[in-house]
Amino acid sequence: MVNQKNKNKEIIKINVKKESKIKIKKKSSLIRLTYKDKHALETLPEIIKNYLLEIKIQQDILSVANLFQSNPDLFNIASSKLKEIDSELNLAEQKWLELEIKRETLELNLS
Image (tube, rainbow, N blue to C red):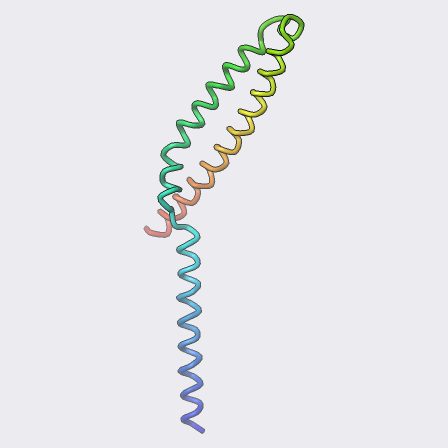
């Protein structure tokens, strides 16, 4: 009877250790920066800068007086391109922010 209780305690201890190891592994894999993440963190600022420049160009085109009346095709192309670039810019900024938060979280956990 006493032997059975000791075995049960040992089994419980082993299971608790396994569960805690699994939790630690899951947490560390969630905040790990992959090569792809690191590369994106390095390249996204330049990509965002290029999107901002392209948005400025499209806005300059659209700011021409009477553009819609004189060249409706150019107006439509510029406005649709502006919407597209703005959407891509928002996605790039969101991705960069997520990766930056992930990187900072990792740094805080390591220190």
